[in-house]
Length: 137
Figure 1 (cartoon, rainbow, N blue to C red):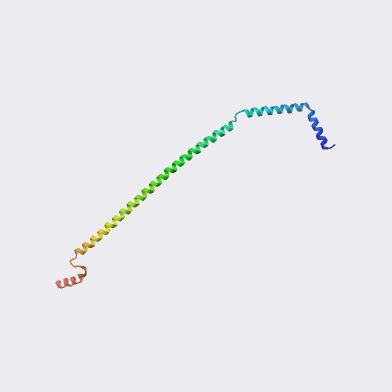
Figure 2: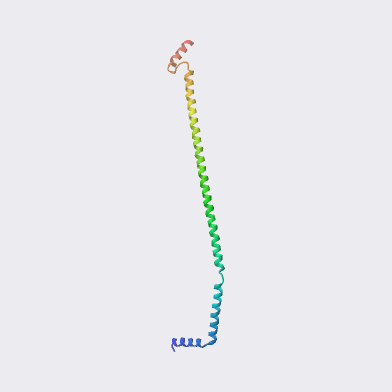
């Protein structure tokens, strides 16, 4: 006998067995009933997933808002510190320039004092020394 004939005979035997047919019908109806019950129930896993996504979305949004606000405050503080440092530097430069000017004025006054305190001008000083030596002798 050929393989086809064996398959044909096997199908005929399955079709002719009423117990097997009844068992398959019962199994099929049980699967359909279970599927209908499973599909008619609300999906809690999906509801949890949606709730989790909403919660994570809000949390990330809040973190983004706090991060942006913190970044803005840090930038403002940084600019204020830079302005304060620039003002301190300008103040120090002004004080240093005033001190240099004061020192120059003091040096000029000291030079004038030495020039005024001399009895003889510096060009005439060798002659004044000769004269002083003659008076001593």
